[in-house]
Amino acid sequence: MKREATPQQLLLDQQLCFALYAASRSVTGLYRPLLEPLGLTYPQYLVMLVLWEQDGLTVRELGQRLQLDSGTLTPLLKRLQSAGLVSRQRRQQDEREVDIRLTDAGLALREKASGIPECLAQCMQLSIDQMQTLRDELKRLTRQIQLSPSED
Amino acid sequence: MKREATPQQLLLDQQLCFALYAASRSVTGLYRPLLEPLGLTYPQYLVMLVLWEQDGLTVRELGQRLQLDSGTLTPLLKRLQSAGLVSRQRRQQDEREVDIRLTDAGLALREKASGIPECLAQCMQLSIDQMQTLRDELKRLTRQIQLSPSED
DNA sequence: CAAAATTAAATTGTGTACAATTCAATTTTT
DNA sequence: AAAAATTGAATTGTACACAATTTAATTTTG
Image (tube, rainbow over the protein chains, first blue to last red):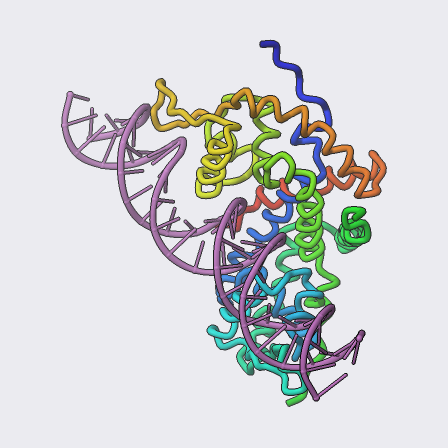
């Protein structure tokens, strides 16, 4: 059986999507040794970033910010609670909502995490300008994708 | 207790890494409805892309190409085997290695997948040129990261 | 050549992701 | 106000990721 050559567009190395997938996992791997002393995974660190910025959000609000659903967040937040970094409490004005709040330990962790962004920037060997450009292109891409869900 | 403002670098929206993480998951989400009719997940599709390009690789070789280890690939490949798309067989010249080969059904699936890259490109609303530029920046970033593992 | 070291997959265990469902609380309708 | 619809978390189930360990096969060494 004659095997056709793979069309150009199906070549792995041509694909933006694989480049994105690989880069994302690479970067997460860079964080791992930096977050390990703090006892955090990368997604947990993202939750902490959001809470350091604005404390006392609901699971839903955290999910909107990070684009993650309760199936991902609920167990993650339980682990942060077990680690003593956040509290989880039903709101009395609406018992469906669960309020996520930093504990003192959670707030204190921000100091220990403060050096991480600079460390990452160093490893990535990009200028501030290059980082901003790339970041903004990716944000535009994400926004574009979420605007056209799947024409249903 | 006075709450300090979050330093600029710890702001979620400032972070390249989150933009990357969010974009990667968004793009995977775009693939989902396109791959569902083929019965593939996105990582499974990546494996198929590699095999369509070069059939008969070992688990290790697939892992090098996709930057995934056997802990991820072994169960994924077993699922592709259950789906009848690939075969897994120890090599006789070195019984440690497992040869992954497309079945006829696996090879045939390439036709059904051939429209996907164009469909994706459409959704992302990027010119060929923009896509190539972004892809190459991401590849450079990934390469850079993997060059400096963690100065150990 | 036999013991030691290395290698390739598989396995184990933890932690995401995400679709789909469930459950309880709140809103909206009638 | 009671029934129906909606909403927010949690739960269930499947599928990655990846560190660490195990197992078996092959190489390297003494």
